[in-house]
Image 1 (cartoon, rainbow, N blue to C red):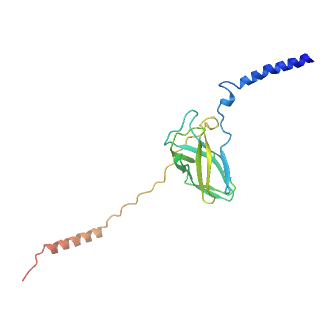
Image 2 (image 1 turned 180 degrees about the vertical axis):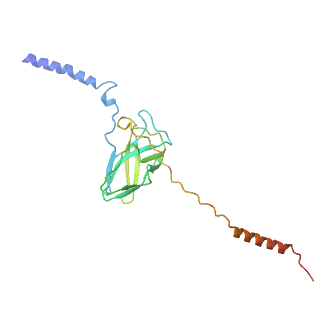
Image 3 (image 1 turned 135 degrees about the horizontal axis):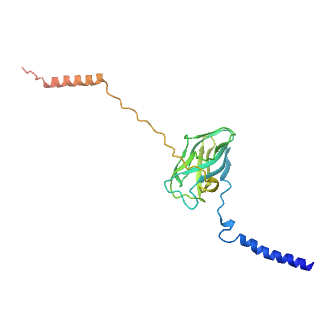
Amino acid sequence: MRWNRRLLLGAIAVLVPALAGCEAGQNAPTLQFHPASSGASIIQNGITLDNVFVLGAPVGSALPPGGRAGVFLAIESQNGDRLVSVSAPGTASEVKLAGGSIDLPAQKLVDLGGPVPTMVLTGLANPLSGGQTVQLTLTFAEAGVITLGVPVEPHAYDYATFSPPPVIPKPTVSAKPRAKATGSASASASASGSASASASASPSTTP
């Protein structure tokens, strides 16, 4: 009986260092990058924002200053609302929404989770890479302003098939055509000019 216990304890003593060695070294699972299971989430003023994240560059690289990045999320409004605008102070000069705004029917999930983004950060102020955090400010017609920090996920792993942000053109304003002078106006101006010139040219008679 004592020998069996000694053999069992000896086997455990041999196995523990071996198992610990599996977690050590450069290939240890704790040293490898694991994508986040979800983005940021918040419930405020009757609005639910779920799994909000910014898609960055592939692992080991960064999106350049002046570049673009897609934003992905799901939104639900309790009483119905409209997302009017989004900004990312200090990160992007502008955040563009496809269509200009997004309608939110009451208690209906609006999925903006890709793979093509409908919300795009443009004019990045600094290089943007996975692991960073971006501060987003969303303005709703009824719920007002909601601000939250969202993670930047690398363009890899679960997001490797996501599309890069499309170029969302600014609305164009057509120039109004110039009003052309009518023939009658030109004729009147010509006639009055001729009459004035004739009157000035004729000599005056003095007694």
